[in-house]
Image: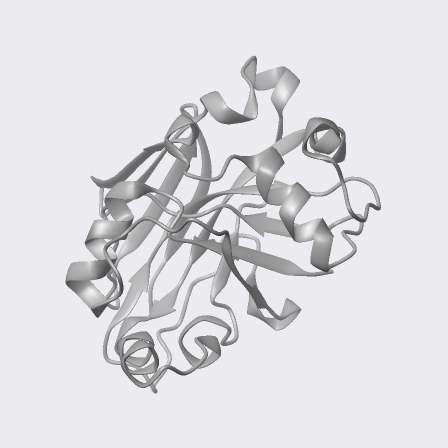
Amino acid sequence: MKIFCIGRNYAAHVTEQHLSVGSSEQCPEELIWFLKPDTALLRNNDPFYIPRFTEECEYECELVVRINRVGRCISERFAHRYYDEAGLGIDFTARDLQRRAIREGLPWEQAKAFDHSAALSPEFVRLEDLGKGIQELNFTLDVNGECRQRGNTAEMLFKVDRIIARLSEFVTLKIGDLIYTGTPAGTGSVKPGDRLTASLEGRPLLDFEIR
């Protein structure tokens, strides 16, 4: 099982990243993606423990697509056959480490791929039950009851089918692979005692504490 993460996939977050970590403000022309190991998964709404190696750990709420069949070099027009449900996830990021990596031209793994850095909703919802297409979905993240992120998948710079087609040019997609499709604006730091709740089309899917 592989965890693919898409970077800078919402224009407002691209600007936010520029202000936060000094990355290029220009929206990417090519898909930006990286991998997390399976040890990064945080399941079942278990609490997230802030790692000792960072002083600036941030949340990034994202729509997550789960691959349901094996595919390689998938045409974009057939990509919709490779998923039929959606969930939510949090891409936890050691922002201080990411800032240093960007400044020094280094990979992001230390900032992105650490244990339990990919919270995943216990439940995925079939698109048929949502009654909407993958590029019509609304999702929100609340921190301590206050809405911090609000996204609609129509705002993605790279749509889900294009993401799948592009990823499959490089890596064979297998059943159970996860794609974290990028985060909208509103990312921020977490601290012990915070409670994160996230909903997809009004359905609560994530609800856990920060320790």
